[in-house]
Length: 275
Length: 335
Image (cartoon, rainbow over all chains, first blue to last red; front, side, top):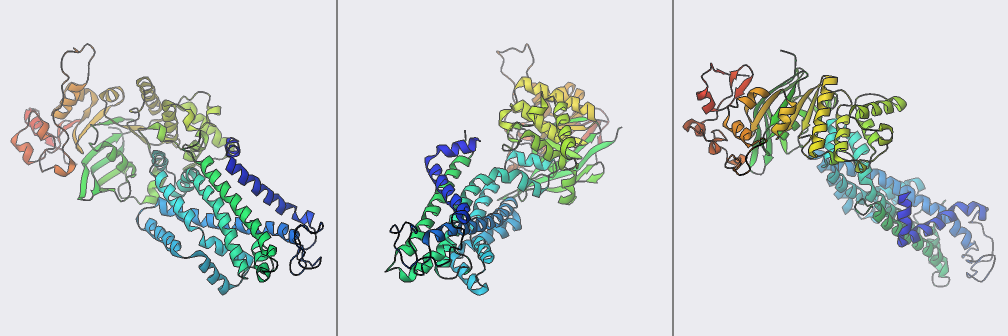
């Protein structure tokens, strides 16, 4: 409870949290507010936003309701972001913890593995893999997770290295606890706070990566995300800029909110600042 | 003679430095019998903590290692046992408590969780039975109101309480031998006495043997049956506590005991001291490491380190001067 209290007293974090709440609620409300398929053609093409009461955000080049597509896109975009970030978190924490806990050749091997992934340009790697294996949504999520675990792993590694030197870890080893029990039961609960903060940011990173992918036309064609909407508006950017701009704004707001929340969590969860 | 719990033979532990390996624990022999309390005493840096960590096989990986010797715990040699088997023995057969109780507990976990983890490392208990065992352990170490304490975090407890919890965790699986590395050094004097008393009581109740590492002769007098005096990584004297206090034979032991204050001692007089400092490990020659600080130094002391000899059945000393002084029949100990 004190966590939520501290969080809500941080104005930036609170702003971010509320924005995120709005996006989340929008995503949940989508099937209720717009029960029909958002990709259906419902009106004349290219109604400008704020000119028609029935289509407040206008229609795109094919006459689809922009608002309905934005609202439905919120869910898929968030879901992709979160699941990619969870993938990255699982890979990153595991590899980081092993790299940090074990010295010797195991620690070195995993440390080098982290460095290897650090040198790979993420978006290029994603493009290469997607064009190679096809644009399936599950696959895209996994690939985004696969290229973005490295920062989480580095942080986890540093935290674990610091915590494993503490006396209580020696005491735990003296009671006969196994390495696995110590890493996951004793060290990670201490080390996880900053990792969680960074992971929030990696949701934002994943959303941006997916948007970039969709913008280039390499997203899953069966799923409508904000990035895809931006991409579809690209052809008409000179005549109807708003088709790209509106989903673009949605992405910016969400990513902004996530980075505010990440900063806020970093402060609230930091044991050194905790009272 | 009752059964041996711990039988350490010729244990040498080396620390690796940039200049090469330094032997910090040098050829240590140590026996602990069932239900016995043995104290290892020595000043800071004499290798006593490293010896204790060697016994637990908890030496920092890559920085220190057991170079030689045997550590027989009820017959099994811990020095050569694979890591997997050692993990199974720790906590169940041999357990340890540490100097600083405040940092010996995980700050983000409740006392209850930590106790449960310690129990479940070896015993498969669940639910109510597990909780009951936790409460029983807290009662054993005299924590008042154990049911509520289970839900507390370590930062809400005092140092003495934390040390009791650490002791509860250490004895959770009824170890045969408990190693206490300066268990009271970080505590107030009044709390020290309580913790020592608690250790005595637990020992009497469970029959475990106790190995206390300390630099305080007061703790030795209060707790130990036998005492091992270490200097610069070597055992210089060992004996029954009464003998050591009454008739210390090694000049270092004599010096240490002379430092102990007595009630009624004149305040005007200067406290005796052992002159000089412990020679750094890398600057040691073949001779006795105490030679430069010793009042009774002989020529031979600088040339050759003295062997451990038995003055009586249970009084051993490693000192040339003591060997000469001794009129009693002397046999070299060759274990």
